[in-house]
Length: 241
Image 1 (tube, rainbow, N blue to C red):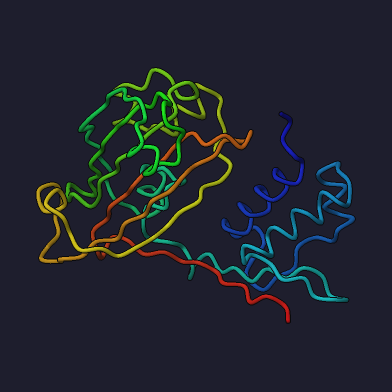
Image 2 (image 1 turned 60 degrees about the vertical axis):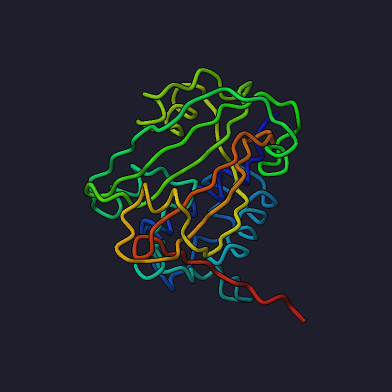
């Protein structure tokens, strides 16, 4: 299935805003300039701009243009958000990363796993568990299920390196979106055994489902992160009334 052009435009402009090409409070190039730059229709540019606005990056101002309202210096998340790889986060935050593979196994989704993950009962899944270290402090664990037919031949070495690098660089897959639920929960026995909690009795839990460019769900992950390592920035948009 061919990818919509507006998604590429959205991604490029989003990256440029986050890297400071278009500074906070500046204006994006005009619609005509963006149309020429991306060799696309005006409708594709408008859809990309609309998506940027919905995600809190820009605000369209009548008669003025499209203003950048995202300040990457103030608004960068600190925790592992599920789409950014752990190594990418380490590079951004400046710590030494290490991932320890705890489990790689093949399972068939029973009713309990199907209810947990959203995969259909009877699906063949690759079940993995990882421990994340930042400067040799155990800061998080990931428990994931991948749809084996879309993500085949996962190994302990791949898991310890980067599953997303394997998806993108070896399989040629693009993860386009993730739906996440974030809670704060009391620690469990596994958290106490696996993580450096430093006296905390609660933990941040991110449960997410990731979808590829064809809209197929390929991953369910539960990430558990220690306080002080995790924080999340999110933009809320009040609907027009």
